[in-house]
Image (cartoon, rainbow, N blue to C red; front, top):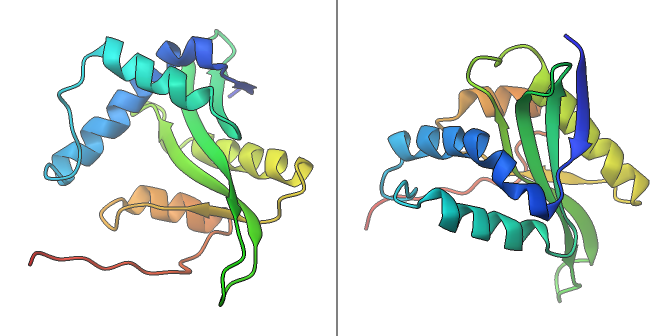
Length: 159
């Protein structure tokens, strides 16, 4: 499959909505206490435009040869200051990655992660972090394949 990856500027944030809605619906079905589904496209677009206009925030889209968006990823550059017990560091943080449900398993997510890593290396950043929910086995497998392994485990439960 011929695939190109391009950066999505903030003013084109609305083009990400169909994919990000797929991701949101997937998560909301499994964690309805956490994830919202009540936003309309206009408010979601405003949120995305403001976020993507932020310093160090980058959205990438995987495009088919016919111009169809097959996947997207959003990452940020984290500037973590020194603390009494921790050294300062700069990391990339993969905030979102979604592949169209009809295209999953074709390596599109892996290509997006590889592009995120390449852009971070070009910026002098040698660490990429990501979070995923434990139920999301596909994300866990894709991230593991990309060399991201559990580092800090967070647990939670009802009170």
